[in-house]
Amino acid sequence: MRIEEDLKLDFKDVLIRPKRSTLASRSEVDLKRQYTFKFSKQQWEGVPIIAANMDHTGTFAMANVLSQHGLLTAMDKFISEAQWQAQLHELPQMIPQCFASTGIRDDDVAFLETILTTCPTSFICLDVANGYTQRFVDVVKKLRERYPDKTLMAGNVVTAEMAEELVMAGADIVKVGIGPGSVCTTRKMTGVGYPQLSAVIECADAVHGLGALLCSDGGCVVPGDVAKAFAAGADFVMLGGMFAGHNECEGEIVDLHGRKFKRFYGMSSSEAMVRHRGSVDGYRSSEGKSVDVPYKGPVETTILDILGGLRSACTYVGASRLKELSKRTTFVRVTQQLNDSFSTFHAEDSASR
Image 1: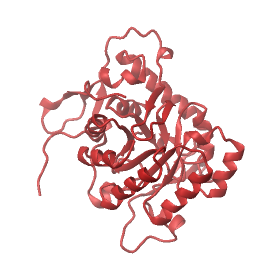
Image 2: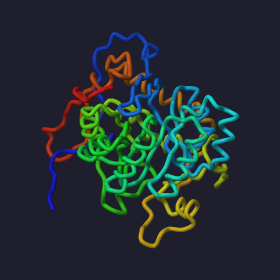
Image 3: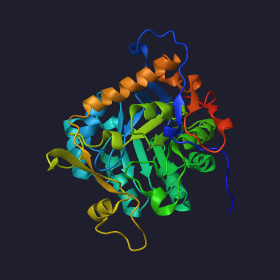
């Protein structure tokens, strides 16, 4: 047993310090990024925000709206082949903006192969709660070997050494975050986790050094958190709770005490496991919770709020492009933790891609 005593921070623990800017308007900020992925060599251009691959948010209705703004969607891994085929015929232009998601079970990987043989998506999201197992690394290697021209995002991890191992196994994008999600209870149930801002900063330095990219997954509750994730060095930001409760989400609108809600739950919750697996395995516990989120109407308004907040953040530090945000960011600590001598730290050297 050992204790690390250096300071670790979440998004709520810091603010971005403003700097002199020559930008006249937030409309001058370019949020699009251009990437060439390390292994697949695929080129992509768009706004690097991804709807989470939860069955509530990883829907084709969500993907249809997000794709119109250049955003991506990680599809729910329980979407049927028939549903994929229907969308391929109805909205074929949307499919290239979708990740096909999978777990590491043999049946998950077999189903992924079925989808990829018929649908022209170039993105794979290999998603598990615990990305530290040898089995997970082995599946990353297997998918990289089987699909050399597909862009592979794999996670979740929170430490630099494991992020590096996933890149060396073949991940183009490493997904970072354990426990920060709004419906994730991993930290409460297991005591395991890592403050998200520090996880992004440390893992970004590691994966960028190997020529790969990072996706910050979880912990964003307001547009300012999205800005902080990019400022910390994230190349992509995945959002679940912020996209929850909209028309485009799975689930019916219910009326509770005169207010409208939609059901939202973590994919490791008892509700999700019973729905998709039939039961909660006896050897494990639920690491997610179920909540009723206020109904928010069309997701379009939320998208514009997030993009507007991100543009404003860039203007406050003089970044004319999203690519410049991490280079121009100084984080100021606003919580009282440990030693006040750590009150300010810089993310100036966080690599931006």
